[in-house]
Image 1 (cartoon, protein in one colour):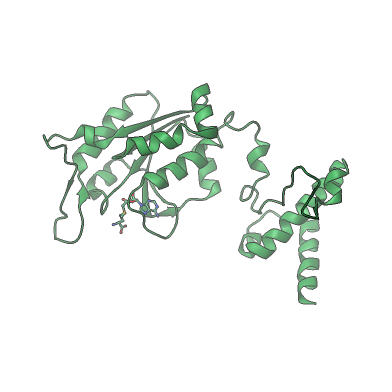
Image 2 (cartoon, rainbow, N blue to C red):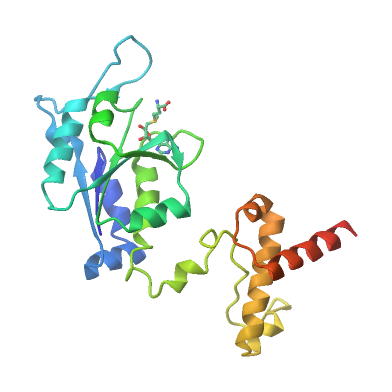
Length: 246
Ligand code: SAM
């Protein structure tokens, strides 16, 4: 998969994408990430990309021309058609399901806004979808773009050591993940649950499922409404609810 980020702050994005798991996947050629400076596509000597909003009001707006020309240049860098996402507090909130869908695409272009935003006309011209990372407003689209790039890239086959790394995780199956433990077996008088040391795979699987249900009921009961639950799961949840009422 190829991810292109259109931004006014390429170094900020590049630095993050060079690190850790995504950086290693990039070095191995499993994914490609490129950051492009919208400012390089201005047509004025001052390299100014923004101007005041028509109609008055606070702040500045990134103009349509440099964004469009930057996008057209990036589009030509690869034969595959890109899917274009504009990071915006007005978009649909990012979910694991959306990240999974995007991870199947061959090419993703992510546009970062700044100041008061981007001229609406270029958004209408090039953007396929607006995505928000939550109901709050940041100064720019760089952190949201990095959140999106990270969450999408780690779902691309070959980036993590195995698909199980994410299929077992919170939000993938509609539940929160069970608790995890590592060495030592006892730490500050706290012991690792016995079943995890038993080597009995079926019991471990059952314990983990029950813990995932317990946690989701406790921390995010809203998620249980849309989770894929078996008859056994529903019985276990009913028992937990009964216990909680005692
Ligand atoms: N004036 C805009 C509005 O009220 O909708 C907000 C502009 S914001 C200060 C500047 C840029 O940051 C946006 O163009 C967008 O790219 C990015 N941004 C801010 N908050 C975001 C969020 N929650 N999710 C995704 N992008 C966000």
